[in-house]
Length: 245
Image (cartoon, rainbow, N blue to C red; front, side, top):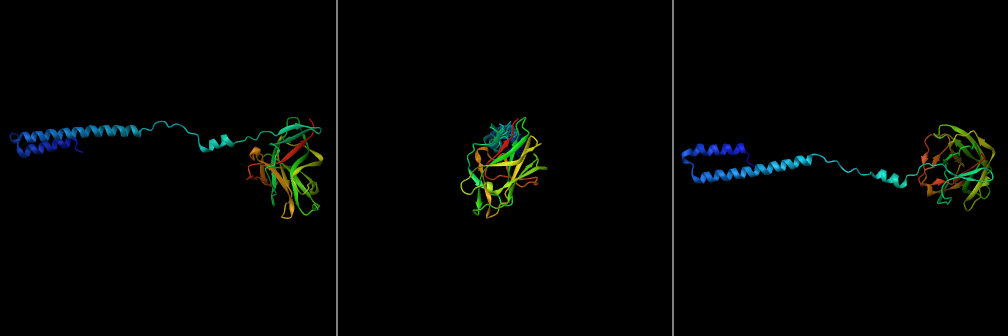
């Protein structure tokens, strides 16, 4: 496009060539038309530059929720205390809908689940585990381990043992595991690690329940400070039998 200073230069050039007295009407008309073109082009350019300037000024964007926030809103489950059901021994602490959605045996690792004791409860008398044994018809003559560890996995609090023979082969069911003596002096919150020393021909399938999304469960062994998250989005079907208040 032609700017105003260029128009001035062209007009002066025409006048120098012809001289003021030789400028004809045709030349005058040409100069006027050229001026109109320049003015129109200038106005359009200024308008476009103004629009570009407005476009360059960022307007406040509407803040949108991220996919992560939506996922947390839809699937996030807080680690709430377990349900406490009173019975003749004290209280039974449990999670979920108590319906098994699958089962697993962990060779070289163990089932870990989190618990929080109700206020006023100071002892644990045993566990209930929904499980079934596999392997030879006769159970191995050995014990499995139930280890209590601290909230941050840094400290082993105590370890209890019970015989493999408590578990039956076949359909999974609730099995009561009574401690020889109640476990006391536990912190309010802790983890329990089961270790069946599972192998290809010996082990226990522990059931899991997906209604609680796996927030209470991990996979690992006592002494490991960074256990793995479960892959099946469920929690081990393990319950605690406490004493009375």
